Image 1: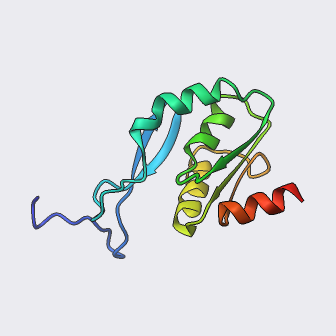
Image 2: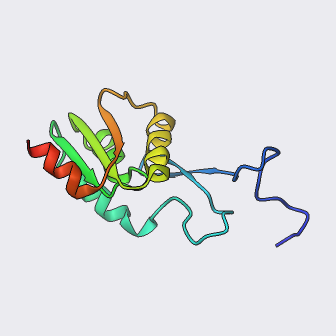
Image 3: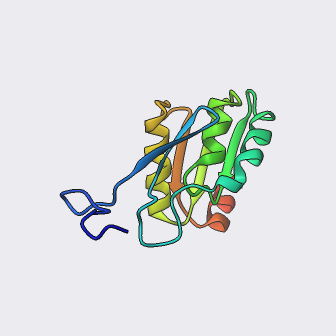
Length: 125
């Protein structure tokens, strides 16, 4: 790594790169200090397979992280709606950014921070 190169912008924020997979855009952070870049490449085939089953359905993406399954359900699968749930506010924020990056309507796709068990209890009440 070149010590003169910075992984941060002028405000000290991590630099993001846009990755595209199957027409879906994701913000990624390949220069972050940790091992997570914001994208799980190994789930590509699973995201595509699930998208094929989503037409006109309401989708629930638990432990959604960056929203990959929900995004694919809407963009590739023509789902009626999708809700992503994650216990991490950072993950929810990333998923919301990815939905915005893809120009998706907040009425069709949403993301919430909650514990999965808590969310499921309230979802069935």
